[in-house]
Image 1 (cartoon, one colour):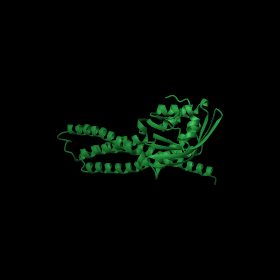
Image 2 (tube, helix red, strand yellow):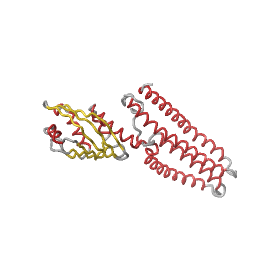
Image 3 (cartoon, one colour):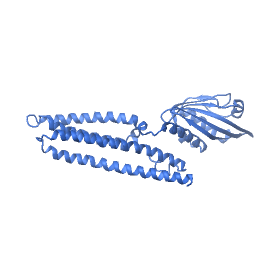
Image 4 (cartoon, one colour):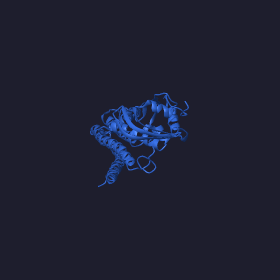
Length: 318
């Protein structure tokens, strides 16, 4: 089996697993509130039953158990999406061709979709069972029937507050919960490799997505390009100018990348031709990374003099 066939098989299995888990989660999210609402109506017809309170507690525990299963499915789907996107890139699929790379990003910082839907429905079911339990254990049914409305309003307010707190908590931890072994290392290495591919194809928008707004790019030397570029616009302006024919033909051939959770280092060969002058140099870039964005870049070359001569008259606006 060739490497290409292995990638295609892995991609097929990841896609199948993702679809199966998504389908089951969707059916469960549809059936759970329907079953809870039906049970609640039937149980509340027997408010005097001594079992109403214990049954409400049972419903809460059962819902919590189902959410544990939902949470694991959410982790796996999040992870499978990342794996499928990586496989699509290795298969040479563009974002327009790949179903995982090309899907629109969920709104509200990637929460508007299955993660938020699960929270909304499962918390609603839990609070519905809390109401059943409260009615069963309370003494307001006959002497003070208005207290049932107070209970309902109080639980409604509690539901909104709990949903907001759970939303913030899950949103802040979802990427870390879904990460596989050494996921940060793989993700950071992939971020750098994507940057090199985007530069080779002159895709400035792809480069922009990988840069933090306050990125700092340190380019030492005594030439027209030497500068400390201090935001994404300045860095992109510099990269655009190196792509222009007026500044010569310039290509960066990546030779290797190593990364940890915060930093990455790359080795590449720069080849260029400008005004009849040929240039070839091994260079190292050190990246500081945060949240899948490049925060700082340091540039190193073993032959600074040759680098300065080639870039001495490069027209870079600052």
